[in-house]
Length: 288
Figure 1 (cartoon, one colour):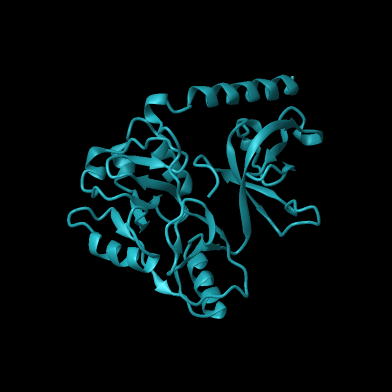
Figure 2 (cartoon, helix red, strand yellow):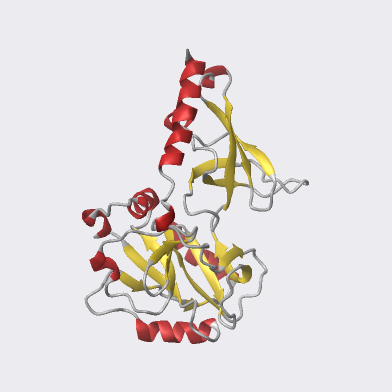
């Protein structure tokens, strides 16, 4: 009986995933080419870098007319939210506050905008993708463009110069204590490139990464009849099982095949696979 329940749950999840796919009319021809961060490690040079809080929300790209997710899905925000935005493309994070990722995700994914939920959202803007010049130049232009009078939900991300690793670690500890996710470092001399680059670095108290669900593997023992583990694949094509970190509710209704998930881990083993990988959450906007 439990086996049937698990299969039924898996089929339901798969069906739900098919139903919830964004309509073609709401998708771009291609996902926007956004700058993606590598991981900061102690000992990396910090000269010329800026540092800011890493906002735990959904990556948002404003093309001058329409708001999109990193994956290229149209964000159906209320007209009042987008009307004040400039014709200039903006790169930022659609954010509902510290520790409110799930709420931000739910708000952004809805094709019928919830006005009350959007009143709690902020568009934390950290770059101008179409602005010529280095990040130093783009940051100066951003400071002239934002904030917008009458639109307090459009927020230029505060930046400060990075100094030493010790100062950076102290800032990370303070940010995490206040409920933040981590920090982002941006090389001032860098041009905007729509790719993963060491000119943009993320610094968190733990390692995390994203992978796509390839298969739901049935459980054994006390998990018989529901999810035992997910077989996942990294953007580089490496596959491994993700078996820890799930709640009972998540095992009863696991992430659908094709879904991106975020996992935590402690370094890598000799083969390059993550050590002690544990499920963290579903990540609908793909790898960050």
